Amino acid sequence: MTSTALISCSINTTDSAKLGIEVWLNDQQILNQEHVAELIEFKYEFPDDDAEHELRFVMKHKTTEHTKIDEQGIIVTDACLTVSKLAFDEIELKQIFIDQAVYTHDFNGTQTEIQDKFYGNMGCNGTVSLKFSTPIYLWLLENM
Image (cartoon, rainbow, N blue to C red; front, side, top):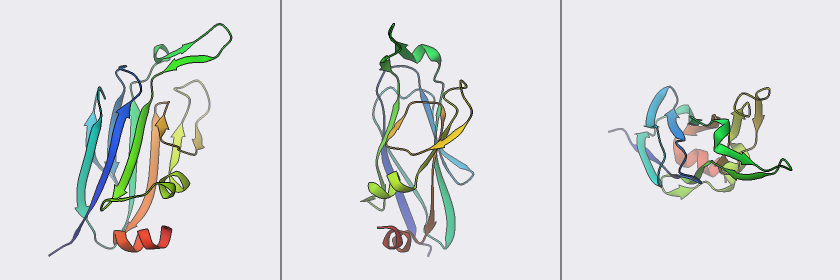
């Protein structure tokens, strides 16, 4: 019998704007939400075999209308998605997620694509990726 591991997280929005999110594990889409209107408590079980993995959160549908800027160029309101409480087998990653996740985006098409740190908020269409390996407990021990 193959053992399994559980990915869980909370996905929410800072605004009622029609921002969407996709979650991918390797090349398999495991969530596709066209409009995040309220808190999503996401869970997904996968084989805990000996393998390398990439978990990706992809924000979509953000436009320039979702960001309000005043006359001084200061952002007044901004529609964002938040990814929090990411856990493997109910062990929250916290600092590991901050240290190892990479946020790739191009400021919604206004600048050259960059790879940035991720601190929980997705403010631009783009991808937050986290590479990890299984068995999950071994990876957690090596990274905590």
